[in-house]
Length: 89
Image 1 (cartoon, one colour):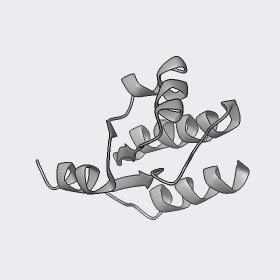
Image 2: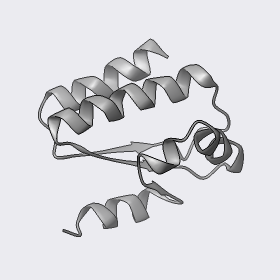
Image 3: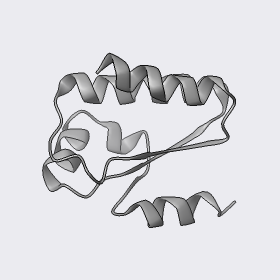
């Protein structure tokens, strides 16, 4: 999960206005994965980067909700929906 966190932070550190994490191929997640996303969201908040997640697997959505990430970052059912939302405002 360090690699995931490092990749997310690298995009944020380059000054991205929007970061969309495509998790549509993710079938499961554990605390370490959620922690990596949470840390990236914290850094994004400081940097002014908007973070969106595209998640299709119900189990992943449930883990994100249990950890409270669904209250911190928008979660979309498809990558296309996340991309379309980033063009609004």
